[in-house]
Image 1 (tube, rainbow, N blue to C red):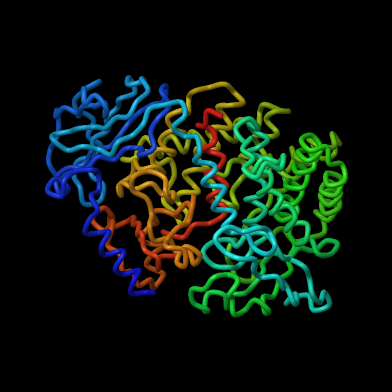
Image 2: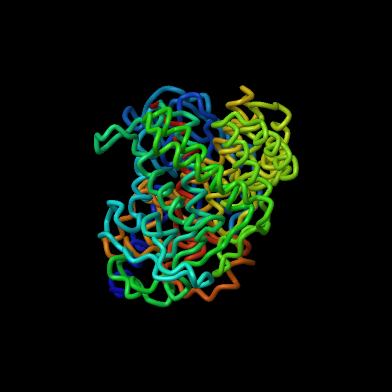
Length: 550
């Protein structure tokens, strides 16, 4: 099997052209553009780079069907050096607004084809949701694999008196088969939040059972989190230990350790906040959408009960693997408090939310652990001053964007794609509540970076665009012909992080576009730059749904 993977990678490298140009042109000029396309009124930009001086060269926008030029201008904004290339030119063709299929042409080189249409983003969220079905664990009707891990968990390692606990279900976090409270709560909340933010965008019901697909997926997370609250004031924060990484690639139903997947107990203010946020929002939606009072009451009761422990537990829980270890709790506790207020109208919760959200302040970031902006957004609907915390973030992000070549609004990290999507998410929230277009470019440039306007000329989402990751660090596609719908790659990562991990790679697909400081590898062995996670998909679902027409 390993030999087959190597052949596929090498074959693809021989055939691959990086921007639709001929092989002879590759070494001279490259065009990077959003490979999905644009809404008619979008800001529309691309990056052209080369070691040649292309100043004052003309670029053209060509209609794919008629082959007629619809717009042209000169290359005159040189953003300088990135990686191995001296000249990077930003071009703007926002004046092209008519529906159609187009490509860019510059000095004989052509970009990939892209669309302009109000419907160009329809269907992407459905693909992103399919990835979460692949990640399902237990008796949850998973996709691409059989029911698995039905014996989670035989024991709680640090709570011997607990005995067997039922933490079946939920999602495998990433390419491995470990489950985490932190990322399950983050993912579940964002699914619920996405639906609440604009329910009209989430009416797809593929199995015709009366429940939107996004809420069916959220229910997988809600039910697991309820089971993870296995005793009063206690959570399971991880299922399975690091032996999972020592077993080699296998399908989850064939896991050699399926009878020996211990759970680990932990409790912290951070967990209380996220659990209360998820359960409160779930209670609100299940009551208003499904009139399911029993389930809504169950969720709300669990939220209120756990919230009572907020003064008597550690600030953050300790995750035994060290993965997804929170260092702060104010933002998550604020989110839990404001969601409790939203469903109960109990002003004690509102007072708590104000205190916690002010303590959280602006975090100038986004990740599974840095979500202060969600609490500030919810509170800004009651007290508009909380907008300023989000504004601080956005001003910082926009400054980073304006000083970058490709428009990314945050520093590269482990999980860059999730962070950039989170930058866009925060700008969307601010723009929606305060009716401003000041951050439209920030939103669109993060989206475009994820979808191809980046040094490597790839989208970072499986099966989306013309060029996308083929070799995810994930086990299930390994046994399914490489197929992994809607997965979001972790993306480019600083060399200062990568050098700490001894990864033997076999793919050189994007090497010429890596810089000394930042690298991306479409390589099945690379668990840093090319592993998908449930959290990244949840963030992508929110952001890309924003551009759907329905």
